[in-house]
Amino acid sequence: MRQKVNIFSKTKLLLMAIVSAGMVASCVNDELFRDDLPDTNSKVDTVFPAANFSYAASSDDFRIINFTNLATEATVFEWDFGNGNTSTEQDPTFTFDGEGTYPVTLTAIDGNGVTGSTTIEVMVVEGPFQPIILEAGFEDDTLPEGGGDGRDSWRNSDLGGVIQITGSPVTFGDQGAKLPVPAGDRVGYQEITVEPDTNYDLSFWYTMLSGSSDPSLTVAVLGVTENGPFANKEEANDAIIASVTVTDDSEPDVYVQQKLSFNSGINNTVAIYFTNGEVEARLDDFTIEVGIPGAVPPSAGFDIAQSETNFLEYTFTNSSVNASTYEWDFGDGN
Image 1 (tube, one colour):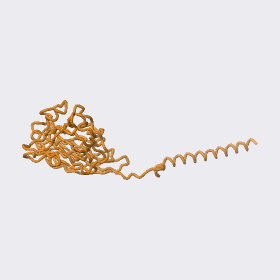
Image 2: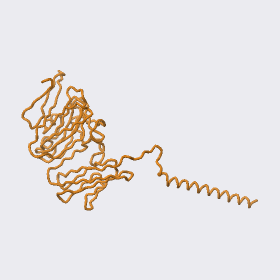
Image 3: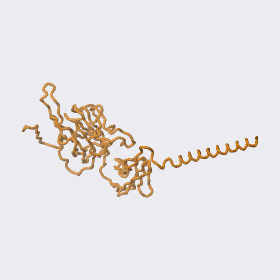
Image 4: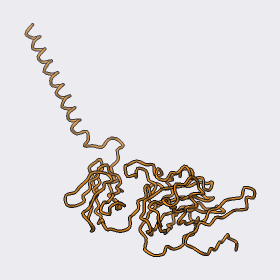
C-alpha cells in the first residue's frame, strides 16, 4: 500500500512539472513574440522623418555657421560637416576653415529607426551678416535651445499684449500669428542682429478678415541701437526706419506675401514690430535676406486713431520713409 502511494505521488509530481513547464514556455513565447503583431486599434506609422535645416553666419566670424534644425517627426539628429566632423546636437554650430562651399548632411531618425536625410551646399563667404528671426513661422518647439510656444520671441509688454496663435488658416507649417480687434491691442516685437549700413529685404505673409470698414496691418522695422529701448508705442513709432501698411482683405483664407526693404543705418540691432488696425489679421513665415546694394525704395506706412468725441473722425499719422511726396486715398473719390 505504501508503495502505491509513493508511485501516485511521483506521478502527480511529474504532471505538475509538465504543467509548470508548459506555463513557462507559454510565458516565454508570449514575451518573445508579443511585438510581432500590432496591438488592438494600433495604426501603421505613415509619417516619416523629413530632414531640413537653415544656417546663418555669426556676426563675429563669417566662418562660424549656426545651424537651425527644421526636421520633423524625428528625435535623433546626425550632422556630417565633412572631413570626419560630425555632431548629434539638435542645433549645432560649426567653424569652417575659410571661404568656400561645403556639403553638410543632416540625417533625422525617429523612434522606430526610420531615417530621412538631406544635403545642402553651405556657402561660407565673408560679407553682410545674415540675420536670424526666431520663431519666424510661429511654430511650437522651434527655439534654438528647444521649446517655445511660437510666440515667446515676439513678446513686449511695454508696447502691447501678446499675439495669439492660430491653426487655421496658415500658409506654412501648423501655426500662424493672430491679431484680434481692437486695433493695436496686441503687438509682435522681436529684436534681431544686423550689420550696420546694409540693405535687407524683410518678407512675410498675411491675411485678414473681410468686412471691416478700415482694414489695415502695419509691419515696421525699428532702429534699436539708435533709439531703443522703447517704453511705449510713441517711442517705438518715432524709431521707425521702414514700414509697410497692407490692406488686402479680399480673400480671408488666402495669404498674401509682402516685402519690406530697409537700410540698417548705424544700427547693429533692429526690431521687427507689427500690429493691426480695426480688423482681425494673421501673419506667417517671416524671412529676411541681404538686399541689393543701392538706394532702398520708399516704404509706405501709417497709423490711425479714432476720435474720442466723433466716431466718424480719424487721425492718420504718416510713418512712410524714403519718400518726399504722399498721396492718400480714403475711398469714394476722397
